[in-house]
Amino acid sequence: MSIGLDHHWETAALGLGGNIGDPALAMARALQALDARKDCRVLAVSRLYLTPPWGKTDQADFFNCCALIETELEPEELLDLCLALEREMKRVRAERWGPRTLDIDLLTYGERIEKSQSLELPHPRMTERAFVMLPLADLAPQMMIEGRKAESWAGSLNSTGIRISKPDGLWWRQVATSD
Image (tube, rainbow, N blue to C red; front, side, top):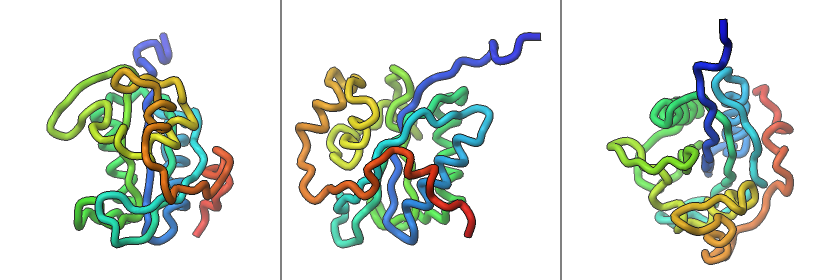
């Protein structure tokens, strides 16, 4: 019997954010839930950033981070899992770029480039957003995205108003998980 030989592990990058309730707690719980699964492992999490809203600017600042995970799930399955975690954290999709308890975006999945009705890899707008690229550059500065390194993208974006909330990538493990 061969265990684990039938599955291929792939590294994926996730972007997490939120600005309603306790978004840092929601992100920590989502990361802990991913890490507790047999088909996912959290490899690293960026510092936690506090960022001005983007797109719809008349709302509270967001907490944002990125995570690198290793998974046996295919991209669509991973996206479905992320959406389920958002629902568990009471995410309501009322308006585009509006306030939310938790948002989890699948940014990259290995080297895959694909586009379907529900998913585009790499994430189509990630390189335009400092709140994504700064934390991603924390984790994987050399990651190539559309022919440029993550650190190069991060350095080219306007990061006005973005500040570090938790300076260490272990913050998500230190957040209390009980209510």
